[in-house]
Image (cartoon, rainbow, N blue to C red):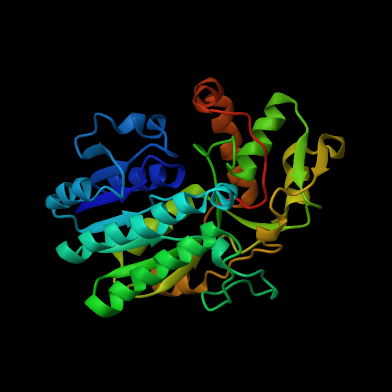
Amino acid sequence: MNLLVTGGAGFIGRWVVKRLLEDGHQVWVLDDLSNGREMNLEEYRNHPNFAFVHGDIKDEVVLEQLFQNQFDICYHLGASINVQDSIDDPRTTFQNDAVGTFFVLEQCRKHQVKIVFMSTCMVYDRCQEEKGITETHPIKPASPYAGAKIAGENMVLSYSFAYNLPAVVIRPFNTFGPYQKSSGEGGVVAIFLDKKARGETLTIYGDGTQTRDLLYVEDCARFVVEAGYSDKVNGHIVNAGLGKDISINNLARLIVGDENRMKHVCHIHPQSEIQKLLSNSEKAKELLGWEPKVSLEEGIRLTEKWMVENSETNRAEEEEPGDERGDIR
């Protein structure tokens, strides 16, 4: 097939591109590199089925030209993803995540291209049941980031119903793995591993009892890709997670193994914290036959191995020193 991945130079986008190329498709990436990195796609630069376009999802001229390529599926991952950034500058997040999504949707409608919309588990209210969060769980837009994503979700589903456009909303839980940034609001696993390698203290926001369901990135990418391949999920919202949660305190212990290297600090945005996140992915299993394959421990081992092997290159790409936050994507 001929496929478009917006945000394909980002962390998850890079792994989605990898999977699609391995499946033999022609893959186009649109990314403005505001969050993504060219190094994420370096190995595909000369791939015969790969094309990269440096552009903005809000640029309707670029989109109009790009969609002349008659895509079969648009994997729409391009977005602003940082919670604190959305609190400090809600306009940018809304423009990218809601307005940008509208412009992409219009092209998908015009050319009848299926859209896979990458949302986030951050739209949910806290989990209060041991069975985990299902797709019918209450939502709570506790940050402009979550609010913009909910707006994007509703637009995507409205196009599915109003125009019979093939569309699916996916809500992966907190994803981690190789190529994730260890700076700014990067993933907590990457940040903790980076601090461990540097011999630094792992600082934890709040009391560290907040929990996250941590999904290894290759499992996430497989879920994203298969949501595009299947017609069974059209018109649906679908979760994906490991199905086990861990507190940030216990994650720090698992990674560094030394209580003396853990320090708690005041949370920078406690109003947007979700205390417990635990995915129920039964719907993904039922409709896609998808289940996670990589355990948290194995995922951490693979991520640490990659970070050690690529430490110089990866750190050169980081723009600022990191801190870990409990609201990772």
